[in-house]
Amino acid sequence: MDESLRRRLCDIRLVAMDVDGVLTDGRALYGSNGFEGLFFNVQDGSGIKYLHRAGVATALITGRTVPAVQTRADVLDIQHVYQGAKVKLEAYERMKADTGVGDAAICFIGDDLPDVPVLRRAGVAVAVANARPEVKSVAHVITAAAGGCGAVREVAEMILKARGDWEKLLKRYFED
Image 1 (tube, helix red, strand yellow):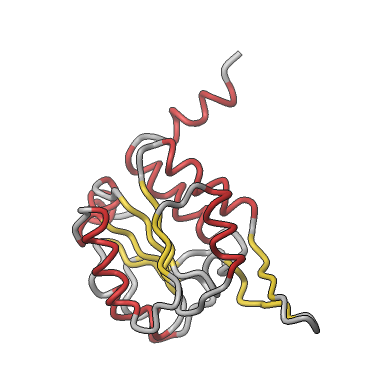
Image 2: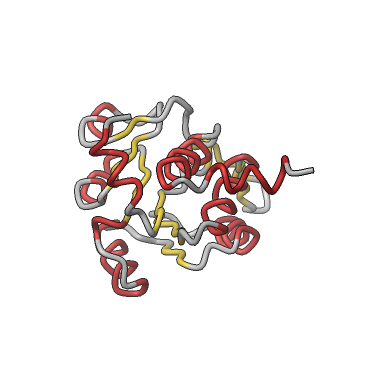
């Protein structure tokens, strides 16, 4: 990792992310009764919890409104959830006002065209491995993992390692 990126990662106070294609693999389950289910990766969830332990806030910005998203946010203690954000940049600006965190201290993770305006504002712009080429072209970082398959965990570890918090976290699990 180059020094410029490491410095920017050290400044991150908020990690915001799209949901479909980032926190999930993009699949949605529709039943005959209208129920919709989404598939979430538990390692991504652990990464979010690790960020919280290190004092990094998290947020979700998604174009759809799905009860499962709020349920997942509640399970992970994600305090800032913006659903139905047809124009994600408007939700991003609301998030900044709600949190008091400026662009330079925000990492945003996206995968598709509606994420591009937000990625262009964030201090650290991340595209998941299976993001659209146009999204990758504006990203500072492209994950090795695909959306819904550990990409968020990868970003969490990258931030925690850059900040020096990863070793502190490991002690919790490896101390005798």
